Image (cartoon, rainbow, N blue to C red):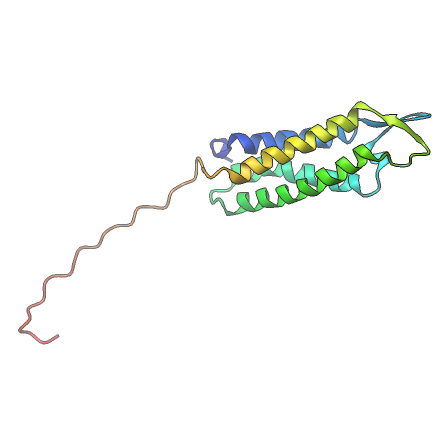
Length: 157
């Protein structure tokens, strides 16, 4: 593992992924009998957000452990697409309360979740767009071969 390979957006993507995973345990909605976190409030969205958070946390790990840029770029692409879907799902849940007959309002966790998803989107898009690759080992230089000796035109080949 070489941390010199990490770029700023890779580190930010991992950090926002960790924060997103943590926000799933925060209170998202107020209910008549207390609060509900994302795990209790959602059926599928919580699993998708957890997958998105794990992909985002994998970005710095894979970038730091791979010498070639192919796999880090692939994980960046997967993370961006997962986060785009997550943004849509979280915005829908921000606007429309789940189980409206039981939920009485929004708690701070829903806003933290939206902020974490937005931060993950921005940082993963930045990581995808950034073209430098620090710490990558360059291939060995190509050795020039000497030219063959000049052939005497009078001798047959």
